[in-house]
Length: 178
Image (cartoon, rainbow, N blue to C red; front, side, top):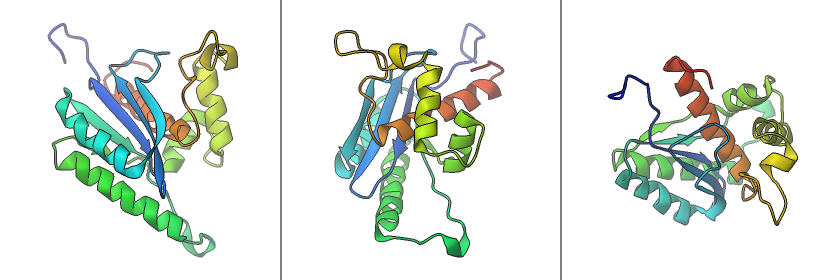
């Protein structure tokens, strides 16, 4: 609890969707419902790692990395999946070595949180996030009148989903409804 008796979230929440060569990264500085992430993009992994390492300069940061789930023999483990997992470890190491707390929710947890269905795909998650921000016009906007999610592209959608899932769960633990 903060001094005023109101529970608070960490001041900085970063979400990552790790990839083979590039990863989605979003960073919130503080959070209010409907607020745009401060940073949202797809970055080369080495750049994303450096940004994650720099979170240690912020007050009370947390890193949320989407963790994939593999289901037995029907899942073919590819070189790209192996590289993404290695980068996940590098991101965690960059955070942990500098005292940044990290969380690794399973992908299915994140997907189910936003869509209510563990079998949903990336497009379903993106749609749920757009609806959360008021629909396409409000969330994405237009060139002349951009919405808060205008800069979110590609893997950054899954990074946004990871960060918001963690924020919602943390708010629920603190007794506030997301």
